[in-house]
Image (tube, rainbow, N blue to C red; front, side, top):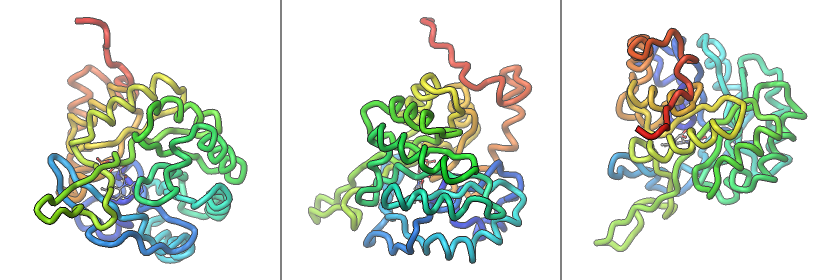
Length: 288
Ligand SMILES: Cc1cc2nc3c(=O)[nH]c(=O)nc-3n(C[C@H](O)[C@H](O)[C@H](O)COP(=O)(O)O)c2cc1C
């Protein structure tokens, strides 16, 4: 799958990627009302990654349904719609609005964005996480993925709460909260001061989170964070992810998802596996 916020609304990638080969497309998170996002600069490059503070810039759910979904629905791959509510009621209203809308295969609840004030509460408090997932579950029949933040002490506890609330899968990780400084100007490099770190720099954190969560829940885990090639994908599968998403790598190599799909059968064969399921969670942690 391609990760939310890193693939536009897919249209701009159509000439570069055979979109129908993707397992799913997760478009940029939508909110109930249009949002202008955070002040620029909104991105900056860092060692082995990037920092962003987009701030959920989007045109709102109605514009998405009217202008983006018809195109997305015709691609021939699953469209997982990422939603973020300002509060409990807004999450439920958005989920109810999308329930039964043609072209929507599942919802990913973005309860993990570090770039909006109040946005991350649902992902850092187990009780709030359980409640919002259960609420969404109650108003919509779509499969629900809860997307979690690594910016917590115990990510497995939050994942368990999402599972108890009725989530069908856990996606993780969203970005790691970070800061980039231009010391000569004594200024932060991002207009919003803090931002979310992504790319290869966060892969060990993401693998750790996937490993811990996969052992704590029974539902599938969708892993992401720094995936840029087949070796990264295989690391995530072996660590416990049932599926993966690719984010930042799309920016510097939009064809990365195709490369990974081409290489997957060979990598599975190296392990004597016939399918992805044969390798999921097979990490051997016994002392060497
Ligand atoms: C520029 C940018 C925008 C993003 N926007 C969103 C978003 O709208 N919703 C979301 O759930 N995640 C968003 N993310 C997070 C990614 O989906 C992903 O969880 C994270 O970047 C880690 O994966 P990666 O290292 O492969 O990028 C964004 C990431 C970047 C770099």
